[in-house]
Image (cartoon, rainbow, N blue to C red):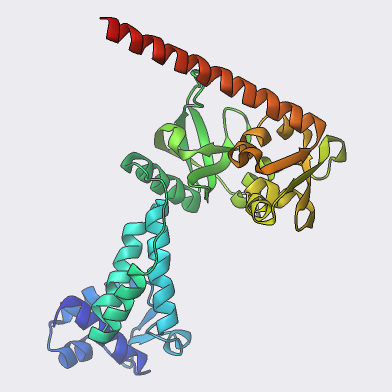
Length: 334
């Protein structure tokens, strides 16, 4: 038998509840006792709680709580793992290779009928997500490992505005996948505060000998959302905006991350939102542009800002079109 088969056989024998020595296991399997030691070490490294007792009545055994747990996954659990692997791979999960190895083990010990069913489930789910470069896969692995081990990293970051930002020490508390992008949340030594950073804007990441402790009960997800959504506690900064449109169009608008969280009242063809006044003049007009003329906005500040944004865009592309036409005429004359 191969290594995997021998390890599985050892696992089954120890799950029977008997305490067995390395010599007894070797005799049952017909292998050398040194091989048993290696397989036991591999099983322990995989998370199997094997206990070694010394003495005349000693030997290897498994903790009782592990004996009572199911060794194999049922069909629903297998399907969930298959689908989780698809989601993780397409989202750029930093340890998707290890997850695929785990799924490979499921397939390895499945019979022909079970394997066919697993592969049909795998082919029945697709995820469309922006591709992530190998460099950022490496960064994600470093960030996740550092978050788990409490290791400070040195990070170089490009804000995308052409500014020269010095490298900083960064304590990654966690990574978050949101709307097709990965973010790292943690303590920034340069700003001396907790900040979030886009992983695809990191230009360098290096390990240090420094360590940190994550604040108790800290949630990277909650931190990121709290800085993306308006502050509901400050009513002075909030504006009430009523938007009219067909029910299906408003349903789609309410599924947007910002508008869904800001929804205050909903009727079939109207929706009332409580939005941060600062967002009305920055992000909100551009979020609404794809809906074109299918929405009616009953808010003077937002309607004015929409008109300004659309006028600026029209002027930009109008000038671009003029230049293209002039260039085309010049080429024809030449």
